[in-house]
Amino acid sequence: MTKKINIYEEASRCLLCQDAPCTRACKTGDPARAIRAIRAIRFDNHKPALRWVKDCSDADLERAEQACIHYNGPILIKEMLRSINPDEVDHSHYPDLTIDFCGIRCESPFFLASSAVCTNYKMVARAFESGWAGVFYKTICMQEIKEVSPRFDAMHNNATHGDFYGFRNMEQLSENPVEEDFKILHQLKQDYPTKVVIASIMGQTKEEWMKLAKMAEDAGCDAVELNFSCPQMKHKGMGSDVGQSPELVKAFTACVKQSVKIPVIPKMTPNITHITEPAEACIEAGADAISAINTIKSVTMDVNAEVAGQRTISGYSGRAVRPIALRHILELSQMTRKVELSGIGGIETWRDALEFIQLGCSNVQLCTAVMQYGYRIIDDLLLGIQRYMAKRGISKLQELVGESLPSFMNPDHLDRNTIIYPKIDHDKCIGCGRCLISCNDGGHQAIVFERATRQPRIVGTKCVGCHLCRLVCPTGAIGVTKRINKK
Image (cartoon, rainbow, N blue to C red; front, side, top):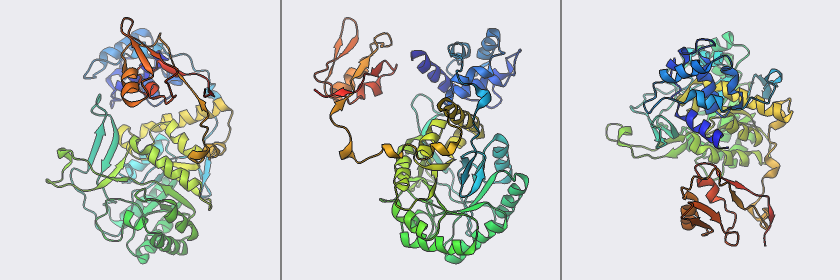
């Protein structure tokens, strides 16, 4: 386990450079494969990473390390890759990931979310060529859009400035003329007929909603998404303020359903107490599916993100919002009226996507992770899900949709008569004492620390099995025992 943690830590240091110098150092194999292997580890696919460097010699990997331009010392490529055990999964028999969404056959569940990652033809075309199955194109509206500068801000991990867990944006909708955007969508569908092209639209009046939806249908779009949820719209009667009103979303959904025959997918705002209320209103009006969630209203105080000395409330996304997004997806999946779901919010790795699928989503959308790492992350999204399915013997992705829903219940029904005690592996423990500090000041004072040996010990009579110690341990030295009855 220690090796695995070190592998992930080292891979997370990699800058994932454009045209990485390390990739040109391999003389015996494909030069692009060293960075591909590191990327596989970074995005939770460490087992198959060896596949890409099997032809590289130790000398190749050493040259790759020497070519590394990391500002804090080279990535230990050889040590990292040589410590991985061979993949036990036969990758020649991976299942395909095709799945139906709103009656549309999709190559996989992975779509680009309506955002800055899909604002013109060339961007979407590159994404399709990279392997993305579809796109929710950047939201189209009738109003003139003028963006601010700067428009992005981020909550960074302390260790790496370029790596962030939360992302704030003040961007609004497409700046292109309406006719140009629909021309782009038409051309995309013509050039990539097997990909799914969905127009995202936003109107102020019923007439605008109907007109934009009809233009989407006429352009050949497979479906239309109704953006009821953008948190930073300046125009009255648009964005998340509309999404908080069941009456308005029902009326707008109904008029769009009357004007087009393609599937209609309202996009819900998380900036509401009960997301199911507007969602159920949309379903009553005939919605074919629901997208959720859009970004969460937020504030940051970084002076570098000010717009000419001014600040505003705007949307928050990224890994930090995933648990919130999953809560909303769970509530939508548990509605009496069943509807297909497209999940959005903090998805970065295939495991993140799997969580949304297991809670009922047959489609997932990504934005922030693409902005941070590029379209190339699709490789490990696809590979990770395929390996997971192969290991479990699952042939159809649909089998995973909603499979975790039965495990959720009200808090008063949870088992409160058993306990799982943490267990310390002293071979992995480095004696830092972080578990002691957290248990003393945030737990139940159930750990003692032997000063001479710098080894912690759990006092079973005091331990309540909260597992805070396990979560703060930096080396993964604290595991678990079997669940037993409380004494």
